[in-house]
Image 1 (cartoon, rainbow, N blue to C red):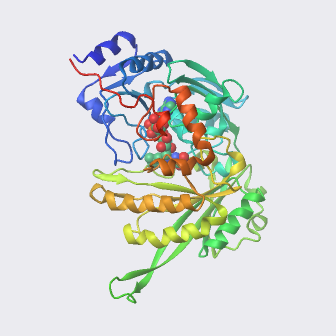
Image 2: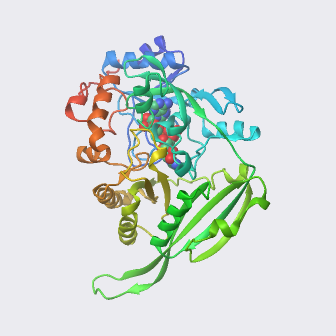
Image 3: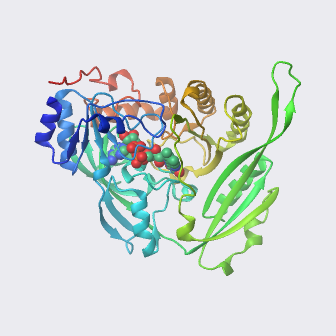
Length: 472
Ligand SMILES: Cc1cc2nc3c(=O)[nH]c(=O)nc-3n(C[C@H](O)[C@H](O)[C@H](O)COP(=O)(O)OP(=O)(O)OC[C@H]3O[C@@H](n4cnc5c(N)ncnc54)[C@H](O)[C@@H]3O)c2cc1C
């Protein structure tokens, strides 16, 4: 039997496996672009198991990575030749206090478990992503953005405390006041500085009903101005925009290429949470807005409104090369025009979902969640699902769009497709990049946690030339 398996069986209470089926099950993420295979999968039963596994990995000079629901898109939750910690057995909600507006739970608990528990008590996490099957530890390591993020920040901004196992195998409780450096870097830190084992997060009271307005724009400037107005005046509780292309003809002006003539429409969905339909002041809400057409009004109970609209399917042999670019509002129109102009050249523009969302800088407190230097941020999401055979040319174009965004002062949301070399990492974190390297050296001195995605400056990678433990 493999010595790694034998050793870990001695020191760990949870499950350990190196069967091919178990290794295959964790060798891809939702993106389906990157493949990596660990030597062994550990399903820890408690924080001590994780501490022991980290100390063992350090002694053996092998790497160790955390994986939860595996919804990343560029291999952030994969491991090559080391130990993969599958966090999903840590799945208990320990404390739930609707009166005090917080809960405490294991990192492997899904947001669905939290929503199912909280809704009957009239409370809800302030921010929910568009997918409830992901875990507390997974989204807090990325950020976690939703329709209400312009108001409440990311899910990480609503974290009150964390239990973390650091890269040296220490188990530490951290909050904004206690061990705050660790707290502020593990959040949105993609498992680079420690493994989250327990989470304490905020809840808020919700109102029982919602009304949503679907407003159609044919002019991007008018849409962006109206989003700024709605947010600055606090008129709404939720906001999201979906872009729809309309093929209006083809241009034959260039003899070499037939070019589609496309008009993009922008569908803004704004929602108010309310106690009663009678309290809606529609004329006031929609006043001074410059939409082209008010297309639909929808009333839903809050518990129905918060549910994700649909399960995202993942057909065999397809890859998800989704990207989210975060732009300073002053550059959003210029960048979005460039992106929409380019999309038809490398994607089937009729089927690729494209949309946008808004963030407000002052609601984001996590240094690992890099944001452009402006108060209003416009996020542009492009979410292509493509046959694996077409991945390479598509990601080349998406990488190019990323670089254009970075040059315009934008940043990337790192949960989606990201292929950064050092210049892009420096651009993403700007002046903070040296601090990121310093924190990495401090909390993961052997450089064993979640390698491969972040690329550090040379001095921050002490032991990356590691050898693998051989099998017996
Ligand atoms: C269909 C779909 C819809 C999505 N919608 C949204 C959305 O609306 N908003 C949004 O913000 N994001 C969205 N995402 C992105 C998703 O929220 C993130 O990728 C998230 O990190 C996935 O969580 P997970 O539980 O699957 O974690 P994983 O993908 O397994 O891990 C994510 C990262 O966190 C690390 N990690 C996991 N657990 C821990 C832990 N306990 N301690 C330390 N590090 C850990 C992993 O190493 C990895 O780097 C979506 C993704 C998909 C596929």
